[in-house]
Image (cartoon, rainbow over all chains, first blue to last red; front, side, top):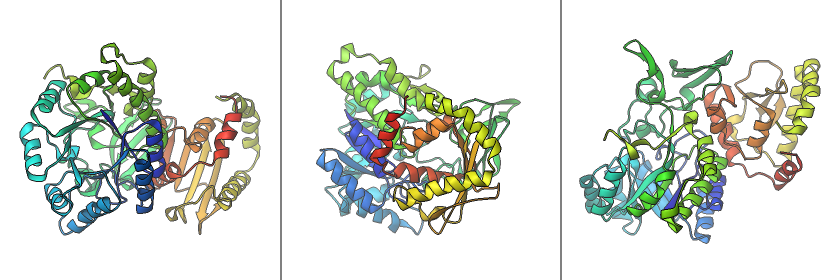
Length: 331
Length: 144
Protein backbone atom coordinates (compact mmCIF):
# COMPACT_ATOMS: atom_id res chain seq x y z
CA UNK A 1 0.00 0.00 0.00
CA UNK A 2 1.24 3.46 -0.90
CA UNK A 3 1.34 6.14 1.76
CA UNK A 4 0.08 9.45 0.34
CA UNK A 5 0.99 12.52 2.38
CA UNK A 6 -0.24 16.11 2.33
CA UNK A 7 2.04 19.08 1.65
CA UNK A 8 1.13 22.75 1.90
CA UNK A 9 4.70 23.93 1.39
CA UNK A 10 8.05 22.74 0.10
CA UNK A 11 9.16 22.27 3.71
CA UNK A 12 6.17 19.96 4.32
CA UNK A 13 6.93 18.04 1.12
CA UNK A 14 10.50 17.48 2.27
CA UNK A 15 9.27 16.42 5.70
CA UNK A 16 6.86 13.93 4.11
CA UNK A 17 9.52 12.37 1.90
CA UNK A 18 12.00 12.22 4.75
CA UNK A 19 9.44 10.50 6.99
CA UNK A 20 8.74 7.83 4.37
CA UNK A 21 5.79 8.94 2.22
CA UNK A 22 5.54 7.15 -1.13
CA UNK A 23 3.68 10.06 -2.68
CA UNK A 24 2.90 13.65 -1.77
CA UNK A 25 -0.13 15.61 -2.91
CA UNK A 26 -0.09 19.39 -3.27
CA UNK A 27 -1.93 22.32 -4.81
CA UNK A 28 -1.26 25.61 -6.53
CA UNK A 29 -1.80 29.00 -4.86
CA UNK A 30 -5.33 29.51 -6.19
CA UNK A 31 -8.93 28.31 -6.03
CA UNK A 32 -8.24 25.20 -8.13
CA UNK A 33 -7.66 23.11 -4.99
CA UNK A 34 -9.67 22.50 -1.86
CA UNK A 35 -7.12 24.05 0.52
CA UNK A 36 -7.02 27.54 -0.93
CA UNK A 37 -5.78 29.13 2.30
CA UNK A 38 -3.91 32.41 2.68
CA UNK A 39 -0.17 31.89 2.43
CA UNK A 40 -0.48 28.14 1.77
CA UNK A 41 0.50 26.05 -1.25
CA UNK A 42 3.16 26.02 -3.89
CA UNK A 43 4.74 28.41 -6.34
CA UNK A 44 5.91 26.86 -9.60
CA UNK A 45 9.53 27.20 -8.44
CA UNK A 46 8.77 25.23 -5.28
CA UNK A 47 6.95 22.58 -7.29
CA UNK A 48 9.93 22.14 -9.61
CA UNK A 49 12.20 21.62 -6.58
CA UNK A 50 9.69 19.27 -4.95
CA UNK A 51 9.16 17.16 -8.07
CA UNK A 52 12.92 16.88 -8.65
CA UNK A 53 13.44 15.84 -5.04
CA UNK A 54 10.64 13.26 -5.16
CA UNK A 55 11.76 11.80 -8.48
CA UNK A 56 15.32 11.55 -7.19
CA UNK A 57 14.04 9.40 -4.33
CA UNK A 58 11.75 7.36 -6.56
CA UNK A 59 8.63 8.91 -4.98
CA UNK A 60 5.63 10.61 -6.59
CA UNK A 61 4.03 14.05 -6.62
CA UNK A 62 0.27 14.25 -7.16
CA UNK A 63 -1.49 17.52 -8.01
CA UNK A 64 -4.83 18.22 -6.36
CA UNK A 65 -7.00 20.22 -8.76
CA UNK A 66 -10.10 19.11 -6.97
CA UNK A 67 -12.48 22.06 -6.94
CA UNK A 68 -15.06 22.77 -9.61
CA UNK A 69 -14.41 25.29 -12.41
CA UNK A 70 -16.62 28.33 -11.93
CA UNK A 71 -18.71 29.86 -14.72
CA UNK A 72 -16.59 31.95 -17.05
CA UNK A 73 -13.34 30.89 -15.33
CA UNK A 74 -12.79 27.44 -16.83
CA UNK A 75 -9.40 28.50 -18.16
CA UNK A 76 -7.97 28.83 -14.60
CA UNK A 77 -8.66 25.16 -13.94
CA UNK A 78 -7.41 24.06 -17.36
CA UNK A 79 -4.24 26.08 -16.79
CA UNK A 80 -3.74 24.21 -13.51
CA UNK A 81 -3.92 20.87 -15.38
CA UNK A 82 -1.46 22.23 -17.96
CA UNK A 83 0.88 23.34 -15.15
CA UNK A 84 0.66 19.95 -13.44
CA UNK A 85 1.59 18.20 -16.67
CA UNK A 86 4.39 20.63 -17.51
CA UNK A 87 5.84 20.50 -14.00
CA UNK A 88 6.09 16.72 -14.02
CA UNK A 89 3.10 15.51 -12.00
CA UNK A 90 2.82 11.76 -11.62
CA UNK A 91 -0.95 12.15 -11.51
CA UNK A 92 -3.65 14.79 -11.16
CA UNK A 93 -6.44 14.45 -8.63
CA UNK A 94 -9.59 15.82 -10.25
CA UNK A 95 -13.28 15.95 -9.37
CA UNK A 96 -15.01 17.80 -12.20
CA UNK A 97 -16.04 15.67 -15.23
CA UNK A 98 -15.38 18.53 -17.64
CA UNK A 99 -11.86 18.89 -16.32
CA UNK A 100 -11.34 15.12 -16.42
CA UNK A 101 -12.35 15.21 -20.10
CA UNK A 102 -9.91 18.06 -20.75
CA UNK A 103 -7.04 16.21 -19.09
CA UNK A 104 -7.88 12.94 -20.86
CA UNK A 105 -7.99 14.59 -24.29
CA UNK A 106 -5.03 16.91 -23.84
CA UNK A 107 -2.68 14.63 -21.91
CA UNK A 108 -3.66 11.01 -22.62
CA UNK A 109 -0.62 9.65 -20.74
CA UNK A 110 -1.24 11.66 -17.56
CA UNK A 111 -2.61 9.49 -14.72
CA UNK A 112 -6.03 10.63 -13.52
CA UNK A 113 -7.19 10.09 -9.95
CA UNK A 114 -10.79 10.79 -9.08
CA UNK A 115 -10.75 13.07 -6.04
CA UNK A 116 -12.76 12.40 -2.91
CA UNK A 117 -14.56 15.58 -4.00
CA UNK A 118 -15.83 13.57 -6.97
CA UNK A 119 -17.96 11.72 -4.43
CA UNK A 120 -17.96 8.31 -6.14
CA UNK A 121 -19.33 5.96 -3.51
CA UNK A 122 -20.56 3.04 -5.60
CA UNK A 123 -19.42 0.80 -8.44
CA UNK A 124 -21.52 2.43 -11.16
CA UNK A 125 -20.04 5.85 -10.45
CA UNK A 126 -16.46 4.54 -10.43
CA UNK A 127 -16.95 2.51 -13.61
CA UNK A 128 -18.58 5.44 -15.39
CA UNK A 129 -15.54 7.57 -14.58
CA UNK A 130 -13.20 4.78 -15.77
CA UNK A 131 -15.12 4.29 -19.02
CA UNK A 132 -15.44 7.98 -19.76
CA UNK A 133 -12.11 9.32 -18.55
CA UNK A 134 -9.88 6.30 -17.94
CA UNK A 135 -9.35 7.16 -14.27
CA UNK A 136 -6.74 4.91 -12.71
CA UNK A 137 -7.47 5.56 -9.07
CA UNK A 138 -10.45 6.64 -6.99
CA UNK A 139 -10.18 8.30 -3.60
CA UNK A 140 -13.18 6.96 -1.72
CA UNK A 141 -15.37 9.31 0.31
CA UNK A 142 -15.23 8.65 4.03
CA UNK A 143 -18.79 7.32 4.20
CA UNK A 144 -18.15 3.69 3.29
CA UNK A 145 -17.85 0.70 5.62
CA UNK A 146 -15.01 -1.82 5.36
CA UNK A 147 -17.40 -4.33 3.78
CA UNK A 148 -18.44 -1.84 1.14
CA UNK A 149 -14.81 -0.98 0.35
CA UNK A 150 -13.92 -4.68 0.08
CA UNK A 151 -16.82 -5.24 -2.31
CA UNK A 152 -15.76 -2.28 -4.48
CA UNK A 153 -12.14 -3.46 -4.53
CA UNK A 154 -13.32 -6.86 -5.82
CA UNK A 155 -15.55 -5.39 -8.49
CA UNK A 156 -13.43 -2.67 -10.10
CA UNK A 157 -10.01 -2.55 -11.73
CA UNK A 158 -9.63 1.08 -10.65
CA UNK A 159 -7.11 1.44 -7.81
CA UNK A 160 -8.70 2.25 -4.45
CA UNK A 161 -7.32 4.95 -2.12
CA UNK A 162 -8.83 5.56 1.31
CA UNK A 163 -8.16 8.03 4.09
CA UNK A 164 -6.14 6.70 7.01
CA UNK A 165 -5.87 9.76 9.20
CA UNK A 166 -7.07 13.35 9.42
CA UNK A 167 -9.89 15.71 10.27
CA UNK A 168 -13.37 14.56 9.40
CA UNK A 169 -16.22 16.66 8.07
CA UNK A 170 -19.84 15.93 7.21
CA UNK A 171 -18.66 14.09 4.09
CA UNK A 172 -20.98 15.68 1.59
CA UNK A 173 -17.81 15.88 -0.44
CA UNK A 174 -18.06 17.75 -3.70
CA UNK A 175 -21.56 18.88 -2.82
CA UNK A 176 -21.15 20.80 0.43
CA UNK A 177 -22.55 24.31 0.37
CA UNK A 178 -23.04 24.59 4.12
CA UNK A 179 -20.40 27.23 4.77
CA UNK A 180 -21.68 29.38 1.92
CA UNK A 181 -24.79 30.10 3.99
CA UNK A 182 -22.57 32.00 6.42
CA UNK A 183 -19.86 33.38 4.17
CA UNK A 184 -20.83 32.97 0.53
CA UNK A 185 -17.79 30.75 0.02
CA UNK A 186 -17.75 26.95 -0.15
CA UNK A 187 -15.13 24.27 -0.82
CA UNK A 188 -16.37 23.81 -4.38
CA UNK A 189 -16.26 27.40 -5.53
CA UNK A 190 -13.43 28.88 -3.45
CA UNK A 191 -11.59 25.83 -2.15
CA UNK A 192 -12.26 26.71 1.47
CA UNK A 193 -14.96 25.86 4.05
CA UNK A 194 -14.44 28.79 6.38
CA UNK A 195 -12.43 31.56 4.74
CA UNK A 196 -10.03 32.99 7.31
CA UNK A 197 -11.13 36.56 6.61
CA UNK A 198 -14.58 35.61 7.97
CA UNK A 199 -13.29 33.90 11.13
CA UNK A 200 -12.92 35.66 14.48
CA UNK A 201 -11.76 34.11 17.76
CA UNK A 202 -12.47 35.91 21.01
CA UNK A 203 -11.27 34.64 24.37
CA UNK A 204 -12.46 36.06 27.65
CA UNK A 205 -11.77 34.51 31.05
CA UNK A 206 -10.81 31.27 29.31
CA UNK A 207 -14.07 31.06 27.35
CA UNK A 208 -13.39 30.97 23.62
CA UNK A 209 -15.98 32.15 21.09
CA UNK A 210 -15.74 31.19 17.42
CA UNK A 211 -17.54 33.44 14.97
CA UNK A 212 -17.99 32.94 11.25
CA UNK A 213 -18.95 36.12 9.45
CA UNK A 214 -20.29 37.42 12.76
CA UNK A 215 -22.34 34.30 13.50
CA UNK A 216 -21.48 32.62 16.80
CA UNK A 217 -20.86 28.99 15.82
CA UNK A 218 -19.31 27.65 19.00
CA UNK A 219 -18.34 28.57 22.53
CA UNK A 220 -15.63 26.52 24.22
CA UNK A 221 -15.39 26.28 27.99
CA UNK A 222 -11.99 27.00 29.58
CA UNK A 223 -9.57 24.22 28.64
CA UNK A 224 -12.06 22.47 26.35
CA UNK A 225 -10.41 21.19 23.12
CA UNK A 226 -11.12 23.43 20.15
CA UNK A 227 -11.82 22.64 16.49
CA UNK A 228 -11.74 24.20 13.07
CA UNK A 229 -14.34 26.99 12.83
CA UNK A 230 -16.72 25.30 10.41
CA UNK A 231 -20.51 25.40 10.51
CA UNK A 232 -20.76 21.60 10.43
CA UNK A 233 -18.79 21.32 13.67
CA UNK A 234 -20.54 24.16 15.46
CA UNK A 235 -22.81 23.77 18.47
CA UNK A 236 -26.31 25.15 18.21
CA UNK A 237 -29.58 25.05 20.07
CA UNK A 238 -31.92 22.67 18.26
CA UNK A 239 -35.33 21.74 19.75
CA UNK A 240 -34.22 23.12 23.10
CA UNK A 241 -30.98 21.12 23.17
CA UNK A 242 -27.57 22.71 22.86
CA UNK A 243 -25.08 20.38 21.15
CA UNK A 244 -23.23 19.57 17.95
CA UNK A 245 -26.16 19.69 15.56
CA UNK A 246 -24.34 17.92 12.72
CA UNK A 247 -21.13 16.36 14.00
CA UNK A 248 -18.49 16.50 16.67
CA UNK A 249 -14.99 17.67 15.77
CA UNK A 250 -12.85 14.56 15.47
CA UNK A 251 -10.17 12.93 13.35
CA UNK A 252 -10.32 9.65 11.48
CA UNK A 253 -7.78 7.06 12.63
CA UNK A 254 -7.58 3.80 10.66
CA UNK A 255 -4.41 2.43 12.27
CA UNK A 256 -6.08 -0.72 13.54
CA UNK A 257 -7.64 -1.47 10.14
CA UNK A 258 -4.47 -1.40 8.03
CA UNK A 259 -4.05 -5.19 7.61
CA UNK A 260 -7.70 -5.53 6.55
CA UNK A 261 -7.40 -2.65 4.08
CA UNK A 262 -4.23 -4.17 2.60
CA UNK A 263 -5.80 -7.61 2.42
CA UNK A 264 -8.84 -6.32 0.52
CA UNK A 265 -6.58 -4.73 -2.09
CA UNK A 266 -6.65 -1.05 -1.13
CA UNK A 267 -3.72 0.47 -3.00
CA UNK A 268 -3.12 3.69 -1.07
CA UNK A 269 -3.66 5.26 2.35
CA UNK A 270 -4.09 9.00 2.36
CA UNK A 271 -3.38 11.46 5.16
CA UNK A 272 -5.54 14.59 5.34
CA UNK A 273 -4.05 17.97 6.21
CA UNK A 274 -2.37 20.13 3.60
CA UNK A 275 -3.17 23.06 5.90
CA UNK A 276 -1.05 21.57 8.69
CA UNK A 277 2.62 22.29 9.40
CA UNK A 278 5.68 20.23 8.40
CA UNK A 279 5.85 19.04 12.03
CA UNK A 280 2.40 17.41 11.71
CA UNK A 281 3.32 15.92 8.34
CA UNK A 282 6.59 14.48 9.65
CA UNK A 283 5.06 12.95 12.76
CA UNK A 284 1.89 11.55 11.16
CA UNK A 285 3.73 10.18 8.10
CA UNK A 286 6.40 8.53 10.27
CA UNK A 287 3.69 6.90 12.38
CA UNK A 288 1.70 5.58 9.44
CA UNK A 289 4.90 4.49 7.65
CA UNK A 290 5.85 2.34 10.63
CA UNK A 291 2.32 0.96 10.93
CA UNK A 292 1.92 0.15 7.21
CA UNK A 293 5.33 -1.54 7.13
CA UNK A 294 4.41 -3.63 10.15
CA UNK A 295 1.00 -4.51 8.70
CA UNK A 296 2.54 -5.62 5.42
CA UNK A 297 5.46 -7.52 6.95
CA UNK A 298 3.39 -9.67 9.29
CA UNK A 299 -0.35 -8.99 9.02
CA UNK A 300 -1.31 -11.81 11.38
CA UNK A 301 0.91 -10.46 14.16
CA UNK A 302 0.03 -6.82 13.58
CA UNK A 303 -1.11 -4.79 16.55
CA UNK A 304 -1.33 -1.05 17.02
CA UNK A 305 1.48 0.22 19.20
CA UNK A 306 0.47 2.62 21.97
CA UNK A 307 3.05 5.17 20.85
CA UNK A 308 1.50 5.23 17.35
CA UNK A 309 -1.92 5.90 18.86
CA UNK A 310 -0.53 8.59 21.12
CA UNK A 311 1.25 10.29 18.23
CA UNK A 312 -1.90 10.46 16.12
CA UNK A 313 -4.19 11.37 19.03
CA UNK A 314 -1.97 14.35 19.80
CA UNK A 315 -2.70 15.85 16.37
CA UNK A 316 -6.41 15.01 16.24
CA UNK A 317 -9.00 17.73 15.81
CA UNK A 318 -11.02 18.14 18.98
CA UNK A 319 -8.34 15.91 20.55
CA UNK A 320 -10.33 12.76 19.74
CA UNK A 321 -10.21 10.10 17.02
CA UNK A 322 -12.70 7.69 15.49
CA UNK A 323 -12.82 4.87 12.94
CA UNK A 324 -15.62 6.84 11.33
CA UNK A 325 -17.75 5.05 8.77
CA UNK A 326 -15.26 2.17 8.40
CA UNK A 327 -17.00 0.37 11.23
CA UNK A 328 -20.49 1.75 11.55
CA UNK A 329 -22.31 -0.80 13.70
CA UNK A 330 -25.73 0.38 12.52
CA UNK A 331 -24.97 -0.13 8.85
CA UNK B 1 8.47 23.28 31.28
CA UNK B 2 12.10 23.25 30.25
CA UNK B 3 14.26 23.54 33.43
CA UNK B 4 16.17 26.50 32.01
CA UNK B 5 12.91 28.33 31.33
CA UNK B 6 11.65 27.36 34.78
CA UNK B 7 14.68 29.00 36.37
CA UNK B 8 14.22 32.08 34.23
CA UNK B 9 10.48 32.35 34.80
CA UNK B 10 10.47 34.30 38.08
CA UNK B 11 13.19 36.84 37.12
CA UNK B 12 11.58 37.41 33.72
CA UNK B 13 8.16 37.90 35.32
CA UNK B 14 9.71 40.53 37.61
CA UNK B 15 11.36 42.10 34.60
CA UNK B 16 8.05 42.27 32.75
CA UNK B 17 6.43 43.98 35.73
CA UNK B 18 9.06 46.72 35.84
CA UNK B 19 10.24 47.27 32.29
CA UNK B 20 7.98 49.56 30.27
CA UNK B 21 6.24 47.78 27.36
CA UNK B 22 7.86 50.02 24.70
CA UNK B 23 11.32 48.92 25.85
CA UNK B 24 10.37 45.24 25.48
CA UNK B 25 8.93 46.00 22.08
CA UNK B 26 12.14 47.77 21.07
CA UNK B 27 14.35 44.79 21.94
CA UNK B 28 12.05 42.22 20.37
CA UNK B 29 11.69 44.16 17.11
CA UNK B 30 15.47 44.66 17.04
CA UNK B 31 15.96 40.89 17.37
CA UNK B 32 13.57 40.23 14.51
CA UNK B 33 15.22 42.88 12.38
CA UNK B 34 18.68 41.37 12.97
CA UNK B 35 17.27 37.97 11.96
CA UNK B 36 15.84 39.57 8.82
CA UNK B 37 19.12 41.25 7.92
CA UNK B 38 20.92 37.95 8.39
CA UNK B 39 18.31 36.50 5.99
CA UNK B 40 16.91 34.07 8.56
CA UNK B 41 13.54 35.77 8.24
CA UNK B 42 12.04 37.24 5.11
CA UNK B 43 8.56 38.64 5.78
CA UNK B 44 6.03 38.24 2.97
CA UNK B 45 4.51 41.44 1.49
CA UNK B 46 1.14 40.70 3.18
CA UNK B 47 2.73 41.59 6.54
CA UNK B 48 3.59 45.10 5.44
CA UNK B 49 1.82 47.82 7.40
CA UNK B 50 0.42 45.32 9.91
CA UNK B 51 1.07 45.12 13.66
CA UNK B 52 1.58 42.08 15.84
CA UNK B 53 2.01 41.04 19.46
CA UNK B 54 3.64 37.90 20.80
CA UNK B 55 2.44 37.14 24.30
CA UNK B 56 4.57 34.73 26.33
CA UNK B 57 1.86 33.75 28.80
CA UNK B 58 4.05 31.94 31.31
CA UNK B 59 6.53 34.80 31.55
CA UNK B 60 3.99 37.59 31.37
CA UNK B 61 5.95 39.21 28.54
CA UNK B 62 4.15 40.85 25.64
CA UNK B 63 6.18 42.00 22.64
CA UNK B 64 4.53 44.20 20.05
CA UNK B 65 6.05 44.98 16.68
CA UNK B 66 5.05 45.91 13.19
CA UNK B 67 6.31 45.36 9.70
CA UNK B 68 6.99 48.45 7.58
CA UNK B 69 8.51 48.42 4.11
CA UNK B 70 9.70 44.88 4.67
CA UNK B 71 11.43 45.74 7.97
CA UNK B 72 10.51 44.89 11.55
CA UNK B 73 9.90 47.90 13.77
CA UNK B 74 8.76 48.39 17.39
CA UNK B 75 5.08 49.11 17.87
CA UNK B 76 4.04 51.40 20.71
CA UNK B 77 0.19 51.35 20.74
CA UNK B 78 -1.52 48.60 22.74
CA UNK B 79 -3.85 47.64 19.88
CA UNK B 80 -2.45 45.31 17.21
CA UNK B 81 -3.86 43.57 14.14
CA UNK B 82 -2.87 40.09 15.35
CA UNK B 83 -1.95 38.76 18.76
CA UNK B 84 -0.63 35.26 19.41
CA UNK B 85 -0.40 33.88 22.95
CA UNK B 86 1.29 30.68 24.08
CA UNK B 87 3.88 29.46 26.54
CA UNK B 88 7.54 30.19 25.83
CA UNK B 89 8.23 26.48 25.30
CA UNK B 90 5.42 26.17 22.75
CA UNK B 91 6.58 29.26 20.87
CA UNK B 92 10.10 27.86 20.78
CA UNK B 93 8.81 24.49 19.54
CA UNK B 94 6.91 26.23 16.74
CA UNK B 95 9.93 28.36 15.89
CA UNK B 96 12.07 25.22 15.61
CA UNK B 97 9.43 23.65 13.37
CA UNK B 98 8.76 20.86 15.86
CA UNK B 99 5.18 21.68 16.77
CA UNK B 100 2.11 22.10 14.61
CA UNK B 101 0.21 25.33 15.29
CA UNK B 102 -3.18 23.69 14.65
CA UNK B 103 -2.37 20.95 17.17
CA UNK B 104 -1.54 23.59 19.78
CA UNK B 105 -4.70 25.47 18.90
CA UNK B 106 -6.89 22.35 19.25
CA UNK B 107 -5.34 21.78 22.68
CA UNK B 108 -5.99 25.42 23.65
CA UNK B 109 -2.25 26.02 24.09
CA UNK B 110 -2.13 28.62 21.32
CA UNK B 111 -4.49 31.57 21.35
CA UNK B 112 -5.09 33.81 18.36
CA UNK B 113 -6.95 37.09 18.43
CA UNK B 114 -7.50 39.77 15.81
CA UNK B 115 -7.23 39.20 12.08
CA UNK B 116 -7.44 35.42 11.54
CA UNK B 117 -6.41 35.65 7.90
CA UNK B 118 -3.27 37.52 8.89
CA UNK B 119 -2.65 34.79 11.47
CA UNK B 120 -2.90 32.15 8.76
CA UNK B 121 -0.44 34.06 6.57
CA UNK B 122 2.04 34.26 9.45
CA UNK B 123 1.59 30.57 10.29
CA UNK B 124 2.02 29.45 6.70
CA UNK B 125 5.00 31.76 6.20
CA UNK B 126 6.79 30.29 9.23
CA UNK B 127 5.79 26.74 8.24
CA UNK B 128 7.28 27.22 4.78
CA UNK B 129 10.55 28.71 6.09
CA UNK B 130 13.63 26.52 6.15
CA UNK B 131 15.07 26.42 9.66
CA UNK B 132 18.77 27.31 9.97
CA UNK B 133 20.86 24.37 11.18
CA UNK B 134 22.12 26.34 14.19
CA UNK B 135 18.58 26.60 15.57
CA UNK B 136 18.40 22.87 16.14
CA UNK B 137 21.93 22.80 17.51
CA UNK B 138 21.06 25.57 19.94
CA UNK B 139 17.86 23.80 20.97
CA UNK B 140 19.69 20.53 21.50
CA UNK B 141 21.96 22.31 24.00
CA UNK B 142 18.92 23.09 26.14
CA UNK B 143 17.76 20.32 28.46
CA UNK B 144 14.40 18.81 27.42
